[in-house]
Image (cartoon, rainbow, N blue to C red):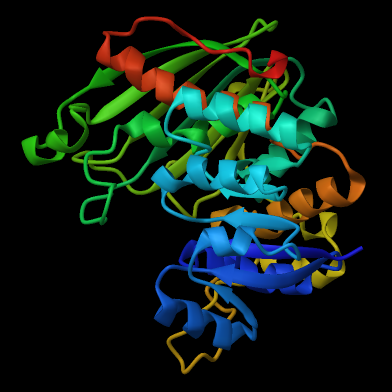
Length: 372
């Protein structure tokens, strides 16, 4: 079975072209980009014949089975809805949408169309997450007691809609892993803002906070999680961290990029409790044709369209794992992970966390996306 894939948005989106070209169940059928110069540059470099500068024209093409959306954040909901209603399966980069109402609408459109929807959350397919998941499934963590995650980044100078963005409006990289490990559903959230960003940044979204930190309570579970985000005016090396504390073992992310994470093992002599560990790669989970993309695969068009696969793995080697999950869900006619309801839950945690911060930490309940 070969699925005809169309990629919408060719900045970050072009990273996925060689993976779909090599996956045994996909045909990298079409690309879509408003800028026709960029469209043709990418199309020529990767040898893709079908090219669209308008998503409506793309969606009208009956040969397209599935679309992978990599457009700017504020286009995600509109384009996902159009694609589902056109009868296409949808993979979309994070976040799912910018409002809770849009999340609800996508879940309903997914149910009505009978098509698959997957939010392409990189962290839950990173080698670090897969390592912790393996420890958990083997029982090595014992009873999980607490989960924690952060995403800190200096986004000064980023263009378009990024300046002044409320930190929690882009929270799925830390909400995703704390929810995904035990497949937990966030029930309610409370969030506090801290510090103040520059006046010219505040003006964009009327969001003053340098850092937003939230506690998430999970439904039908004794667990809660703590997540925090910063985007501007906070000194910190880029960090997407995920930590889990268990009764037998705990996993802590390194403080500095490039260092090894730490496993703490209970009941050892105190000085032996922490131990640095090497996280293995999980390419063996994948078809042989795309295993190389866990450690390489970032394209480079600077050398006369000579494709260079030498820049190392972005996002913890997650890209081929996400592609394989999305494609497998279509082939096997099952829900991908995360499916529409799970994606909506993770995205809405961040949206409502920011609302909570603006209201001094007020508890915000999430809709029950599963029962729509």
